[in-house]
Image (cartoon, rainbow, N blue to C red; front, side, top):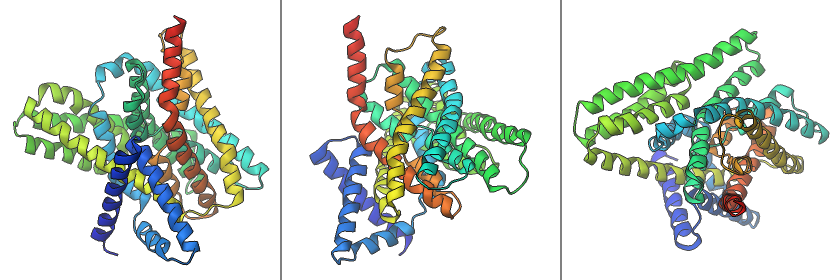
Length: 416
């Protein structure tokens, strides 16, 4: 099937599912499209069992779409830039310590806890997995997905300070999580002797190098934006920054996600204030909001359809049911530790630990990282469990986070 036909099928499905969700269901687009796509996939599976061959056609389309490459080297740069573009850097700066701690210490703690719990649980179920691969699972499932989180938090009506913390953490822990995943994958592959110094160097190169590259690329784009006053040209400059910047950062073995987030924050704040006219700001916001919504619909459509190409066994289903609470427990601990460390210095929203634990949604990035694992038995174990955790996160946590926020915040207000 030609690429243009595949894109036509996926965009058509995304449009139909978005329409059905908006017209009849009324859920946030990420949740609604995922739910409808899952139901659609299950219907295809049922029809296939009755002798209809529609599932084979759907699988043929999905197999032509490299989900991992499509997201990590295609959609992700656009979605991260669109998210960072509307985050106030002053709000982030005021909460830099908690956001930075959650995005680094929190991800590291969660990676180890999830990995250890998964290794123990899978071993008890008779599913043998090396500890390093269990840590790989911990690394890919620990970061909260900014794409899912930012979309849900728009409708959760959380206090501004809490929303900034969750949005800031999700934007940065995504990049940190990808770096940790790549470091552990290199160790697990055993391609060469890996020392602690090499691991530290790789981490610093990816993370710190990504920050510096994002600042440099963002500043060059800022200078170009400031020197022209034509919104068509300025939108093209931001597109070049996102696409070219991400590709160049990745080719230099720097963290593309971190680079694009930093560049997006710079353009969204200094660029918006000092380099754009009101006309440009208006058109730029509309353009990137449209890109964000269209790609979100496409991403969550693909998440819902991926069940068609996954193989679930009873052992994997049982493991998923056990690991989901383990992932939530690890998230609770990884949030509690940084908050406890900083509570003596900073004031936190009442119930922040409960809200950030339940609001730590996982999304397409986790599935994409699992799909990027080299083919083999370990990939066949990790992929379906990752998918189950992500679907639970989007549908169950995503549907209830608004109620949790209202109950915790209003409850705290009533007590005062």
